Image (cartoon, rainbow, N blue to C red; front, side, top):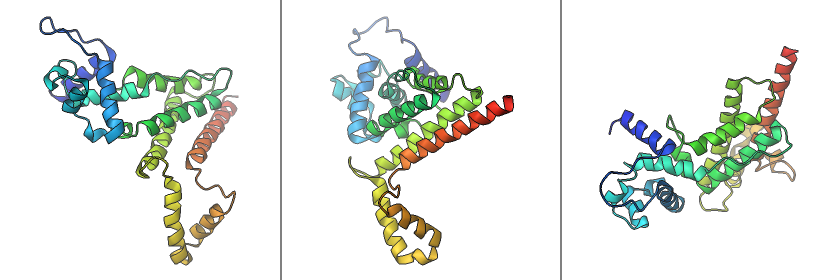
Length: 244
């Protein structure tokens, strides 16, 4: 299957129903069950552990039987991504754009924390499924009523996605659940500043200040999210002034 054919097959799997074969055994699986089996493996062992053979074994069918539903691993992963995201959460009633985007970003971050393999599966140009696009729809719609144009709204959503991805990737790199990557990095920096702080006086002073009680350490997620939303607020105000 070439790239164009694979693209078309992924679109059919994500966005439409594949007609069953006119002949052959009655189908006993569905795409939802197949995607959940792949997710179970990926959550436990990572994306590299996912294979058509492993998924088939978990479902109690042969690999050839699985191919009757999904033509290959690439399409399987696309199904897994969409299923792992699920439908976008409902808007927060009675709240403005900032609270809406804050809630949306936190929920997306939670998904990446729950399914860290999705960070690897959502890189580069690819076909997005209806669940994934529902998340983008929710973020863009949160900016209804603001003067931002379509491109600015989509860029705002992408900026928040990238922040969630970046911090989730740091968390994953920290290793076992419960590890705190910022504290681990801080311990390394503390040692370096102790030994070489005179070469980096501004960094040493900032690090020392951040290490004091109430200094604001270990807040990369909160700090970044608030600054992104602050920036959008400034942009909205600037556009309003220009239009006025």
